[in-house]
Length: 294
Figure (cartoon, helix red, strand yellow):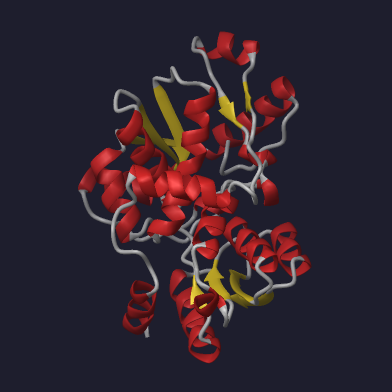
């Protein structure tokens, strides 16, 4: 079953690492469908950290997350024939919402597999967007098995949450916007779940500002990417109860390849630190962010 699934995934995905031109095309393609999000700063947080910090507020993005960028690029890159049978994916939340939202924009069906322990608010959001929703055990094997059956039945086009160069190119537009707004950055840091955002960020920095260090951030309770970065091998995600629900998955072959080449380091955060960061952002900036962001 797993081998069949991987073959299906491979046949539907672009097979070359996105170039700067690919990212620029993605930016133009998704422009009508996304928000150009603001960058904010906080004097008190600058004083607290002894650094000048800038926050790219993708929590203000449509569906509340950067995932809208990758899903928009992937789905709007499909021809009418390719999208005729709809789109399908597995996701714990934000990618699921993004795929459902963009599918509705293209007036096609969306088939979404979500783990049964996904946050209720995200389940309800996907349902509101009109997707066909299926629940599975909270393991990657269960996700893939259920989705494989759906793909065989519907012939929908698979939208991998991160292990797809179209998704990566879309996520890279976040960093492209960021550097256009604040061009003199020294470090870019992003959370790491499947690796779509950090790999897209690293590619954009490599192409346009190679002096910038790209640092990934991951929960210590879900540190498979950090371990893989140290050992040079993909480490399967462990079953974890980390509060950062969006970061409980393992990186993919495509994202890991880019991470190894262009990401400078991956650091980890303890659960209590993640919660403290959420509270700090709320108190000092009056912004609500997800644990995965914190």
